[in-house]
Length: 143
Image 1 (cartoon, helix red, strand yellow):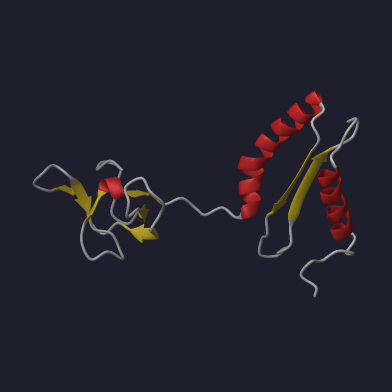
Image 2: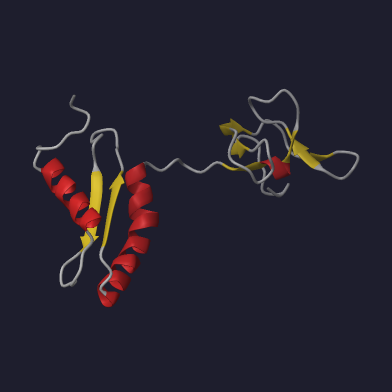
C-alpha cells in the first residue's frame, strides 16, 4: 500500500511474505505511516507487536463464499469452455462442490455429450453417478 492510502482505523490484511498469501485478516491500522531510516514506510497494525512495512499489507477485502466465487469467477470461464466444447464436439463433464451455510451439499454440474459421436466410458460413468446422486440413489459416504 502507499503511505497516502493508509488511514488510521482502516482494515488491512497482513502478508508475512510480501505479496504472498494473507497471514492475518482484518487487522486495524493503529497509526499513521512513517518512514524509517532506510526509506521504508511502516505502520502499526492490530495483532502485531512491531511496526510492519506498508509492502506487507493490503486493503482488506470481504471474503466471498464459494457460491459467489463460482458465480463471479468460474461461471464466465465455464460458459466459454462449454461453447468451445460444443463447437468442436469435445465431450466434457464438470462438477463443482460449492457449499454455503444454508446448503452444505450445493453442487453445480455441467456436461457436453449431446450430438457427439463418441463419448468415452469414463465420462458416461461420471454422468451416471451424478444422476444417481441427484435421485438420492448414490451416496458414497453411506457405509
